[in-house]
Image (cartoon, rainbow, N blue to C red; front, side, top):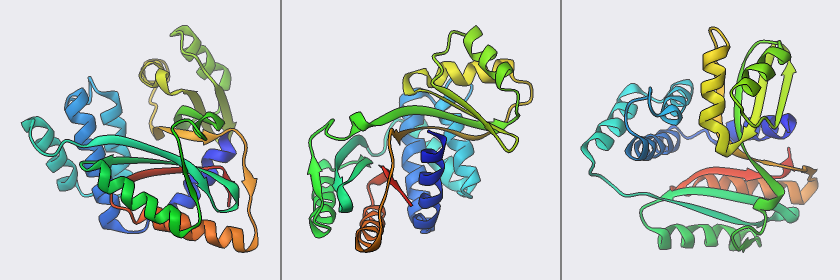
Length: 238
């Protein structure tokens, strides 16, 4: 599971190199998270993690504050979460998460990218059953037993714990995100999360070569350029 996560993380770093796109992505996510769960990070753990992630991606403070102020006001755009699934080049499996204020526009934009790549949009659930929807936490430390004990004491359903190079990675079902984060913060002294998020992780990964790989990379880059796209998950090992 960890290798699949790291693979996606590194590939995202290569393709998400447009600052304006990154700022817009975090602005939307912070706004929606604060609007739905409140602007106080003490009561909205997901918002706290999202803001920390934005800071690590060097999103300016004024972008974050503007999104929070908009959420406080209760007005602004009404974005909806939209998830699309399908098959990309080389029979790759793709999940695309979007935040949109115009679902028809978003669907049309994505359909255009899929059609151009000779890819196929599928129905809901067509590929997501081959992914684990997981909460992921990465922090410094190598005491796997202490981490496991802390989570079990709080009755957290742990999927996996990995320790490598002085870092601990905890995987839990996405529904356990808040409970797992609270348990770690309460029981691991001085914990600072390097990764604190929910994402889809493929249960199995496969390599691509030659033209299939080239077409796949172009396909992902084209999806990244769609304004409403927030996250892309896939089962290809790059």
